[in-house]
Image 1 (cartoon, rainbow over the protein chains, first blue to last red):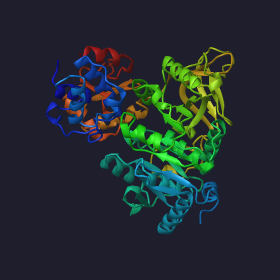
Image 2 (cartoon, helix red, strand yellow):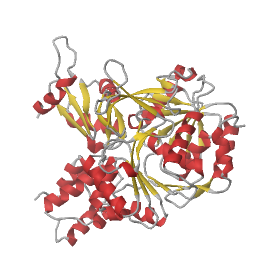
Image 3 (tube, rainbow over the protein chains, first blue to last red):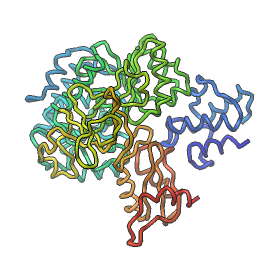
Image 4 (cartoon, rainbow over the protein chains, first blue to last red):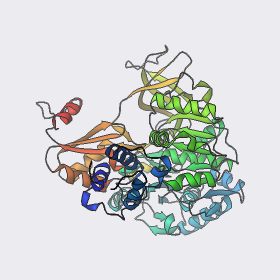
Length: 76
Length: 458
């Protein structure tokens, strides 16, 4: 299982060092709807979970993603 | 003041009906747009070339319509377009003024001095995300004819509330604005993305009646669940901006039929102002993935390699479209803006298609250096030109949703970062690799061998 920062970095094609808790959807060019789709699939593959649609659309920041993952018993 | 522009009478005719609402809830009426048009006209003083920097806000849509209904010539530019790209367009076309609707419709003077053909009303970028210098020139009448055809086949009324998430500077987005302004509907514009909760909350709360998307949107909605579309008011789904795979189109068709909604696949080209075909819902069964039939007023002939019109079904040829919406011609620089109509309403699309027995058209291939990146049109020549400008030997190629750049020198990550910064297409669609460019003995690049070279680059 990869660290959350690596999943983000690979999905958004950005540097892992720039993946901070306050990084938000649409705050950088690289985190747009297209990358968000890739991120969802990568999170599901990495943690072997199936994300609920309401959770997918609520993943508005790295911190929020971490919070949502906790609902699936994932500590990231 | 606004002379013979038919759009001025149309806007005025809708009175104080709401015209557009944004995410912040602000509503602008058609009479507000008329007043804005007069205010901008007074500030400009004479017929001018105006650039308007549009975002997905009520003030941007209002500014676009105010200029469409004016005696001026207008080019809408994505608000996100990097500053150096905007500066390059300003230097090339010398607008008289640049309006930023986000700054309270403030009007900044431009260099000016461009001679405009009397019929020129609108310029559309052939690839907005790359700030392409190549523009399509339109008369007000051409865009009106296309808007009328769209309003007719979609049976639009003043009660519509289209959910506009597509960029307003993009021809598909513009056609939604124009066709709904024609009938006096209120455009519900949003800057939210399809993967955001606020997008869906807004779509429901604001009573949207139609949703228009590119294939990416329909992929995303599939992941979120189609039942998300079952709001009390949403009746129509339209798709254009690239090819939706047949099984996906069939899934939406099935869902729409079961839920009493309409799912409509369409095809167009910026150069055609833009709409050319639509697949009426009654023809969806068995034709999923097809682009359908010509819209009212449009004729499409398929042209074979010998230049003759293809008569028999099942044989592919290049689509030649005859439509009142076709552009006057391209512009490559300011001097071209004085030119008149060069196409006579006939456009060679560069897309190959075949007809079935019922006359339904299906795209079979493409013959131009243009790809769609999640609905955004990308001109590969613009990418190549930027590589050259940063002294990188490389070439852009690829297919829809996969833009590939193979570079000979330089560092792939750095080149990728430079391209992401220089353009406004969705970055996830871009991959850069370092490897050997396939060349003939003459040094000429072998485009056909790029795929192999890409794989070899590892």
